[in-house]
Image 1 (cartoon, rainbow, N blue to C red):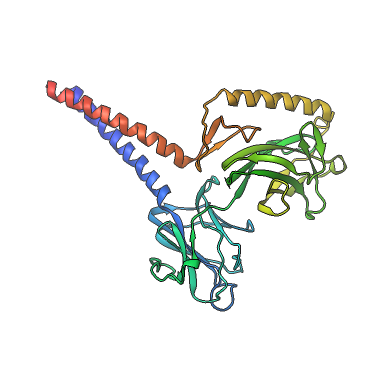
Image 2 (tube, one colour):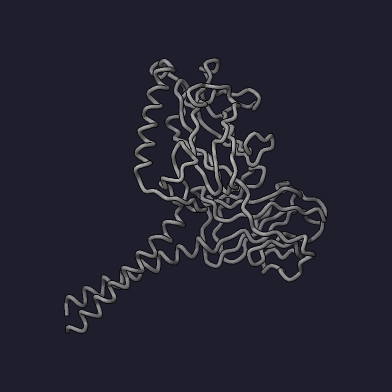
Length: 365
């Protein structure tokens, strides 16, 4: 009987753990951008708002709303149901506007299509069964999805292209070359070019050079066909501070811009703060020696990655890492949501096994 009792305790703890995992997964899956007021009646300033919806109580402290101009609104709330976020300034554009919702780890949670509202009235864009409709505004309550103005004012949910930047703060040092990780989300099946550079105060006066193949080029050099294919892609860009700016240190701005191959218009842009560490005498080594060593190290890392788990497809929750962004192999980054989904299946299978074992033990008693 003792063995059966112990097994029951283990099984009970496992069931609690399983339901906790499934509950977390449910919370992540249910929150969404629910309604957007681009062009309120009267003045836009102080009257624009975005509504979020969640089936369950959720803490979104540190989450971010990002608009098409890459302006960021950091969230601090805990809520369930409908949450209306008001803007004291003019934050949304009446045309060519889109909104992304990121969690505190910069994972994309929800998004809107590119929207347009020129009516200057009490209509808002509302989420209605996998599409967006321009209908009577309903902040803080269920959307008026049946009050669609016309078929021309309905948009299917297609995520806009977005960029994310990541780096190791300890390696952004004057006198050294360093790498910036660039993530591009929601790409179409096309070729894309990238610009990445750092500037201080005046964007026209850049601080950096960029590595293009074996050569160091001017700051705003376009890296052609940096990304290829649809879905999400990740690549790395090498930068270094110019010799003429060797005395610079402190906070600057880093910009990344993505364009379709050889096109002039921007598809997405991100501008973030970055801290540059002051150079010291040990850092001021010959660039050629440093570049050669870094390149060799990078090739070793790429080979290690290519020998790891492979995946022939890219999804919205799985992002490939590696310098060659067009590679169809190497999945080494998965979002929290993707991991939970995957391991919940394993947990459920293990639960079934434990139930079978318990049934056999009870039959033997």
